[in-house]
Length: 175
Image 1 (cartoon, rainbow, N blue to C red):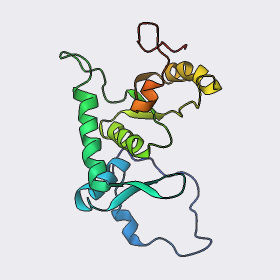
Image 2 (image 1 turned 45 degrees about the horizontal axis):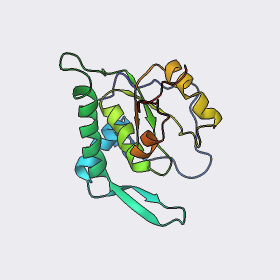
Image 3 (image 1 turned 90 degrees about the vertical axis):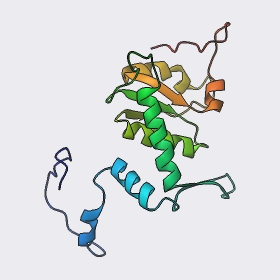
């Protein structure tokens, strides 16, 4: 049964220029990323999903579909039920969440991305500025504000590198 929320195709039909047309088995693929993660996380949990490499091209960490699924489900629950006060949750489906992760931490980024999708939140990936004087770091507040971001998630290393006030609190970003 087709998902009524799936986008409708527009434009003319395309044809294969090289190679063979995809087989009929393609229709059995999950209709969305969340459904794909659920399928492979529960049926092929031990299969590798992501292998991070160091600068020399050597594998540093491998994440399986099962681990990605379980971590993403836990994060989705935390985002929807553990943030905010007891009376009202801080986030609700449709809210935007900034994902500020360095390029050398793809596992945390992937878990955060899928956690947002499972919680029906909108992930907004943001590149980490290389230095505080980088032009991107000067405009990150504007970017977060213009995207109507409710919460930003980041790694410990990025969090420690954020500018602080004299009292030790995180500085407010302009914008």
